[in-house]
Structures are given as C-alpha cells and as structure tokens.
Length: 345
Picture (spheres, rainbow, N blue to C red):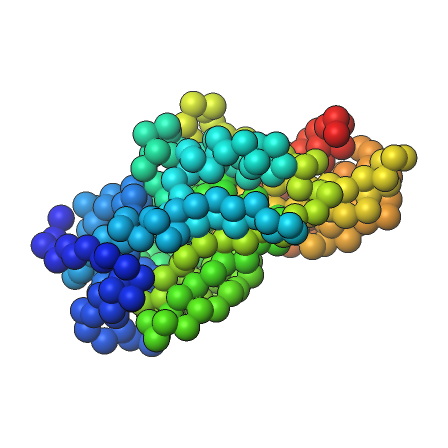
C-alpha cells in the first residue's frame, strides 16, 4: 500500500474542508474515485482497492465522527430517511424497515458477510466499485476504467460475472451492490453536501453513470461532495416488496442476477403501481421502466410477468461467457414478481 495522510473530521464543515484539500482535481476524471482526498467511513472497499494499488488517494478523511448527524434512521409521513453513516446491519434489522420496506432489508441482509455489514456504511456500500478481475488486478494493462484509453480485456476474456445491460464497447464491468438496486427501484433520492456547504438532492438513478466512452468516470458527484443520506418515498408498494438474489453460493457472494420488486395490487391482482430494479448484470443500478410499463393496469400473472421480463432485457448485449445471463435475468425477475404478488398483506 502506498503512503497516505489520515485526518479525522469532527463535523461536516471540517470534513468538506479536508475533502477539498490535496491538490487540484482534473475535471475530466471521476471526483469520487480519483480525487486526491477520499472520505473514509467503514473502508471495506476503499482499503481493499488501496492494497491492490487500484486506488491511490493521497489523503483519507475519517468521517466517522459525523455519525451523530448522519447516522440515524427516521420514518416520517410519506418518507423514510437513512443517514449516510448508518451501518448496513443496523438498517437491515431496523423494525420499521423490516416491516414496511422489506426490499431494503432483504438487499442489505443478502449483501456481504456479517462482519462487513457491521462495519460498512450505507453510502460506502452504494459507492462500492466493480469486482471485474481486470479492474482489480493491475498486472492487466487493458482496463479503461482503471487506465482510460487502454482497452477492455474483459470483452474477450473471463466475463461470466459481468454486465449485459448498460455496457459499452469500452467497458462491460458490472455494478456489484445490492442495496442500491432496492433504492433505485423505490425511487430514492441522495442528499449531498458540496464543498461550499450548499446541499443538493439527486435521484439515486442519476448518482452513477453508464460507462459509455468514459468508464473511468463512475458517478456524478463533484469534487469533495459528501453524501449525507438517502430519502425513500413511502407508498402502498413499499410493504409488498422483496429482493431476489441469484448467486453461485448462498453464504456470501455477489449476484449473478437480482431483482428488486415493489407492487401495489388491486384486490383482483391488477397492477396499480410497480417498481423494478435489476442488479448483478448491469453496469449501474438499473430501474427497468420498460418492464414497469408492460405491467401497469394488467393482472399480474405468469404471462404478464414474462412479457415484462422480455421488455426488461430487450437491450441486453452479451459477450463470450454472458450468453446465459439475459435468460437468467428474465427468470429472476419473473420469480420475484410472482413471489411479491403472493405476499400476504
């Protein structure tokens, strides 16, 4: 691991000041992943990448002292608020989330190991980076995400676990998280503080970027911006919701395919509202508006669920080892929809 400075922030203003230090940030690179100063909470992903020499920040700003301001869970009328520094395990086991937002609880419980869930923060989990082998192993020279313009070794390499939705000819890395898939399905928003102290709110689906021809730019965060929390709108669909994750092993693994589903059904099973997130085989947290459009106003059954799944993966692009993934994704989504439809309210 390369040498770095470690500083501890006592409040948000100090964190923003320290986060803005460390030199100029190139406007053409990703502020979140390449800025010389990086925020440190649980560190479960960042420190791994520093050991691998993939991440090379000059300065880490410990923000765990901000937990009093950004470490709470509050349920208000019409909205659930989650602080950025809430631990994954705390949110997963919160009684309100377990009862009224099952899709969030499911996604958090199915992510990582118990030790990691006890350490990792919600914001850090959302910002975790791809597990593409060619990205994490610096002995591979061709990785546009790590080294812009170098190529993508994964396209003709070992790519079974990588993405089929949202990919480009420059990068097929997948987004590995679970929690963000549930957030994007529920239409969550992200609260952010800028270095000038001004706050802004962005939709979760706008936080991450598609790779396009700049896969090294992963988010729309500006240099030094700090995520402070998440806001999830409440509706009748949040209780009838679940997260289904398909993986090679049940104990601790990333998704090969996953689906986050939230439904509001009429008594005759007609779909009044549906929200669908797809994970495991996507380049960024993915909400499938096409699949939702197929289901709205129709009775939820195997036929309508199958047609929705076809729409969800109509734009899939496969490579040498990912030919099976669109079908795996379709079956995962169908099963998730039908299981959610059978939930007792």
